[in-house]
Structure formats: C-alpha cells, structure tokens
Image 1 (cartoon, rainbow, N blue to C red):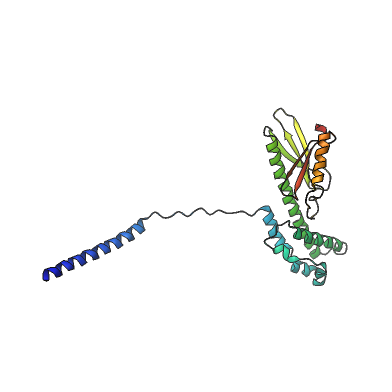
Image 2: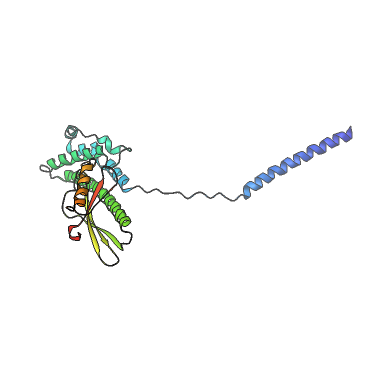
Length: 246
C-alpha cells in the first residue's frame, strides 16, 4: 500500500512539473516573439472638390449672412442652407449650384447700396467660393483633355493646354507638338448646355443632336475635325481642330 502511494505521488509530481514547465515555456515564447509590424497608415488626402465642399460648409451659413444682412432679409431669400453641410452632396451638386446662384444675384443687388466693410468681406468670401468651384472644373477639364489627346497622339513630343479665347462656355485650347516640329491646335469647350466659365449654374444633359450636327458637318466637309470626350453626361466636351490647320 505504501508503495502504491509513492507511485501515485510521483505521477502527480511529474504532471505538476510538466504543467509548470509548459506554462513557463509559453510565457517565454510569448516574450521572445518578434513584435508585429503595424501596417503603414495610408493618409487619404481630400480631393479638390472635397476641399471646396468644406469651404462651402464654413462660409455659406445662414447665421453668417444673417449677422451682416439681417435675419428677415435672409429668410426672404428662401435659401436651403442645409445643402452646404450635407455630406452626400458634391460641391457642384445642382442643389448647391442653385442656392449659390440665388445668393450671388441677391448680393449683387445689395452691392449697389452697401459698401461697408462687413458686407464687402461677406461678398468677397462668396466670390472666393465661386472662384474655387470654377477652378476645380477647369482643372478637371485640363486633366481630361490632356489624357484624351495623349492617347490620341502617342507619338507627340508635347501636349499642352492654353487659355481659351472668347466665349462664355468653360473651355481651353490644346496644342499638340510632333517630333518633326509640326503642331496642331484644338479648341475644347463644353456643350451648349454645359458649364459656363463665370457662372455657377448647373449644367444640363448634353443633347445628342448637337454632337451629331458637329459630326455631320465634319463628314460633309463643311466643318472642322471634331472630337468628343466626357466626364459625365452633363460634362461632355467638344474639341474642334483650329481652322488654320485644316
């Protein structure tokens, strides 16, 4: 009986020793593990359009305009101010474009009567917002145009954008230079119901008949070479070769 008790004691002691060593081993292994490297944090920079939206939310507030012009006047305008803080609306959403157009027209009317510092600062901030909007559209047009003509003329040594000459529609000129020194000049503009270069009105959908007319005139020999490219159904651009290169 005594012998059996010793055997049981030895078995229990062995099990306890194994359990202790196992725990120690796990703790040591955990301490010796190579530290996990954290994945680099990707910083997503806001787009130009998102930056404009942020500025709209900061500048175009009912409280700010009421403080300068009076709440009664602001209420009479019927502006839906909440559209400027709506995160689901793009900076150039139709709701924002309409509201900005109304504010701009009302401020232009008041400009005939008020010249005080507060009003002029408010007017200037509105002008800044409108300028930032158009700058984003102009930049987008530039990027899309350069990309289109780079793909159209892969052998060109240089493709550059130039300022648009005349007209109210948003546009520019594209100059293409080839290895032998020859150049082509294209006039790029929005369609007839597209964006204007100096107004915040929302563009309308392109009319396919307008594009068809350009192409028919080209094919009949009465019009210049024409190209179409777009960012959206509202932002369709028409590019025609300068008549001097025909």
